[in-house]
Length: 484
Ligand SMILES: C[S@@+](CC[C@H](N)C(=O)[O-])C[C@H]1O[C@@H](n2cnc3c(N)ncnc32)[C@H](O)[C@@H]1O
Image (cartoon, helix red, strand yellow):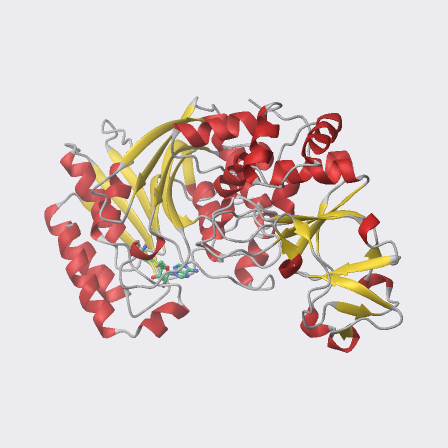
């Protein structure tokens, strides 16, 4: 069945320009990925009838793979398939595929050429609450597309949206609503929801209703949807609608979507689904140990009244106040380029490194700071790169400023500044951050969520580093005395 559906899909892909399909968030799951996703289900083969949902089904590749899987396991009952798809061009191909399957298998199908999100009620309404349609199993590769917060889709699911959401997260929540208690849903989606503030409501909904039982990661993001240039890093997840947490989550990896080299690791559930319901994509024992060590720490930057914040100045919007050289009334403006081997070195003769303003919103107190780069290149060895700025080196200034491509932590003593440097410049915390966030950006929300030692320990660590070279090795040695 899958083979037929894939052949038909390839013909469709050849006939429609990529730009058109992009408008709908349309790219199709490959044969091997569809098979892998279908194999993840634990199907109750004793059910006389099974209902399957494939929302945003395209040509029905995932449905075909699912039916192949359940037949290969010897299922003899009836299968009722529901497919949602909004693109009228793809629907004839879908129907041809479903008709072909129907010739050989016991299926009934319903194709709903309608919007999966807006045609259903998501928000609970006490008075007029509709019971949602419920399915035994759900398989999906939903559209990945950022939509406006005022779009009908976002408005109809406002309780799981924060700012402008991505359609995939709405498909996922609606899927959970459509899933029967105790049953399973497998989706391939971007990994962006696993951390950060934007997906907080989404994660809350997911983990209030489901547990995660499997996650699959691809080592090479470019090869998952071959030829389709999907740049987002995608993962496959399996959710079960139940409240009882398992002790482990099966984490698998493969280098590409051929799945020829799948490796598996059973990670402790509580390490993967951590504080703030962030999801840590741990794929081996080494990473699991990193989480164990860091998660034992009692504090966070905000709990110590030192939250990380983002730099104040968007330089291209404030050109009028930027200066290349000091003049009367100017203050230093710190950029990521000023971070040199663990220290902030200013001035450097850089364009716009001085700021001439009295506007309070553009300035911050000249104090002790740890400055952290927000952006690093993929090939750079460390994601967390920081530099110490001490006010005693620049006593002539009442204020300084920071460009918004750096984050900063305002510290109340040089000792604390060095201590936080030990933490953020260590291999352990760099590894922790990489597990937490797969992108090259360093977000202050995520750094603020990281468990860190208590204040007195940070001070001790700072004292230990103060007169030493600011190397990663030295930071590791100091940190190891406190975190084992
Ligand atoms: C990423 S494609 C995946 C197609 C198919 N599931 C597969 O794996 O090959 C997502 C599909 O969802 C459809 N779609 C987009 N928005 C939709 C909506 N609101 N309701 C139903 N389908 C939608 C698109 O037309 C597209 O065919």
